[in-house]
Length: 261
Length: 332
Image (cartoon, rainbow over all chains, first blue to last red):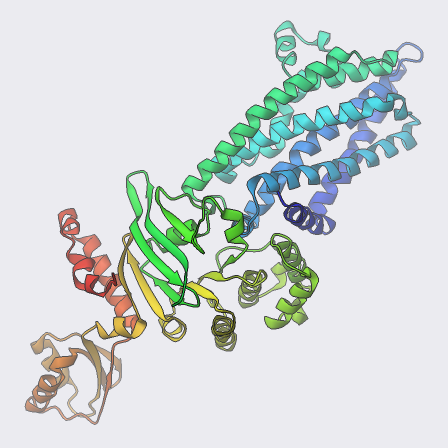
């Protein structure tokens, strides 16, 4: 593992980011729109809620934390697709770059850009709606890490699929996570889901994080059970996804990396 | 004695039932300039991909500097590089940004200095801050080549390195390759459809067809193996007589220009041909005899491959083409 090779990929993405309107839009525009629309919607609903009900905080926290999952996943997948669209994948892998170094670099890029979007969206929400997200205290850290882990394993599955089937399945990069969102109980408790959906939610790591997030808002305390369950499930999925990803890369080497560029 | 920088042993690549590369073995010595030629679909690209570890061989081994590529990939690729016109660097990064980030993929001392030096050597200084999409095809080719020299490679694989370059820049690139070869002992494996370039640059040429190496020799020796010479005759009066004569003698001919006919004749049969022309009462005003070139060899191999493809499958199995004619050229 060589840090300079990881840095090379990070640098390539940062060079690209600073002059790509697409990526700047992804990082700032959409989070801003989400915060504004959901902030207004939740402010309106507050009128019908009991006094001091934290509707705005719950909905906006859901939105903000979902940014962590989404960007953690999206950055890795879009990192692969960028190389494919640019026909640059071969240039990277005729160099001594290891596949694991490349994935680590994309994870690092994901963390950097997630932090940028997250901090921007929180600041905007605090300014517009006078909400204090600092009430989460240290829970910010495990929540963010667990949500990032989910983003990573989803992206590993999608990357594996793109490596195997090429750009014809590239839409998975921006659609896959949406399948998880109803079961993640981002804006409502898991108990609000139908029974069959609750069974699915029980194996989705993000559902425990968002349950924990609401606990933190309502009581100031998060049950360790939620954090531990989310971590164990994330770890299991991450291991499976890593194996799938590695096998997919080996499979593409059988056909030739040039098939996906 | 020169060391082998690359040794390929019994390399095979199969895609399902199709064998793209069939049990090939060869070596490349330190400082050697090897032309790797063959018709489209012959197995060149497949072989090069395996040499770069972006395609897994079905069987066989690849050794660089006496080390197995599979087991010592990172260490080997630090000393190897590749350039082709068919792969791009990110289109909305500038030349300098591309070379900078690529330099971090290798262990290079003083990367900034190296990038500046490479930009200078490849005459890209004025374009350094241009994004790739703002460049012409020739300029992109130059950037791809510059990238290939970033890590001071000991072995360089070049796929059509001068395609789409202006003649002066192509000549400059060829001289640069030969200079690096002389000064630093750089070994090069080059594929090109420009046979004159291959003849100029390469010490040795290896022909591959249907996944097998069918010839491996110095370019001049391969040209010599072609018996046919091109005789160019300028006949101002009664030139139709020459056409009748060629048809009668069943000679292949073509009209190069008005009154100029090019006839393919075996070298040893030239005196007999000229006597026949005289006997037929054909008065030629000018004559030139062109010896066969590497291009003629390439065309012969390619045409015979196409002919063989047209024949029923049992004729393929006979091995009459191209191995029978050319196997004598393959060195042990």
